[in-house]
Length: 424
Image (cartoon, rainbow, N blue to C red; front, side, top):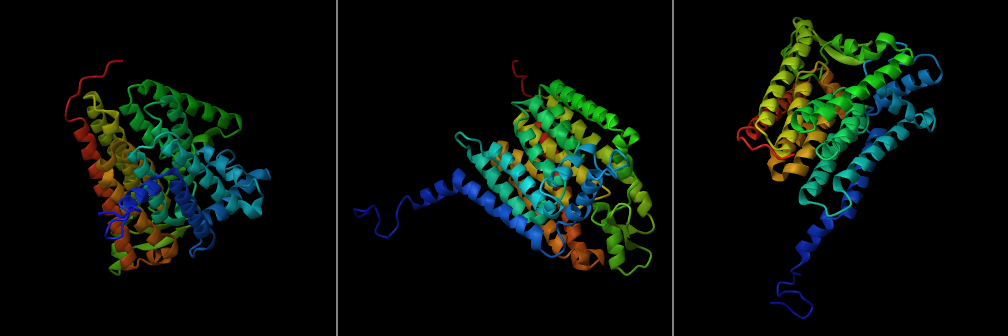
């Protein structure tokens, strides 16, 4: 029963819930949340304990300044752990001078995120799935913490998200975006592979990616890079087993048990903490073959689904997630910023599949939370093999295994029912 003012006898307006949902579902609310989350992440990077912006201001800035002064160009004058295009954002962050390098970096990454966010929510009628994907991405960034902005990986994520969102409708543009991201940090190559397997216009994707890669290599060679143009391959292959790598968990528990045979040591060349002990070198050397086998296995399942005419909506998101998760699990590095990679395939999965992607979205969010707990605030506890933090790292590795299992199963199911090929 209602009164004249539309309020029922219980004192409630019947449309209050609808208005609240409309408010939260509007673009204004999403953009306000975007600004709040990114402002918070910028603040954490600047003032939080653990020096979360350390790689940016302590390493990237030095590389950029050395090149600016003509002393040393990483990837050209000497081998480098990153592909050559990684130098572009590192140099761009010097635009306002060395003193403002960190702040410029954070603004640059936030602007890239804003561009990807605007593509995700669009300008027309926004679907519920896209709205859910936007809210999840913001929550994921908040749960991941300062590392979501404070590493070179953060530059690649917006490229990857837009590339995947445009993969079906604009495959050539998508191939350009994801290939550029690959030459900043290698991991988006997994997304290129997923698009080649899934899309009907796969030849265009492969051709654009190959041609652009050849062009980037040619420019590097003209700049005098020589063999250093591909030096990141050898640099990564020569690394030891980093303390955060999933395969390092066994040695960490051995240290927890009190052994003196295994230790954690800082590598002055690679600038990372690595585990050392019996069998570590063998495990580190096995990571590349394991990664290749994992990628081939996922590729085989993906090709099976594609040959059975699996729909792109059902196949591309889990296939991209499967490739990405393999790279994370079989990686000898395992740095905390690798968790940012999960954003692109999960955002795509929610935008296309909605509730079908709830499980991987929840798993990825849990990985983000554990990552922030470990790094940067209490990272020192992991470096002394504190049992609680070794347990957190173990749980994170298990979650990634479950995430891989879910995605491979989803890819298999996408090809389990044969569909007639669509007309051209």
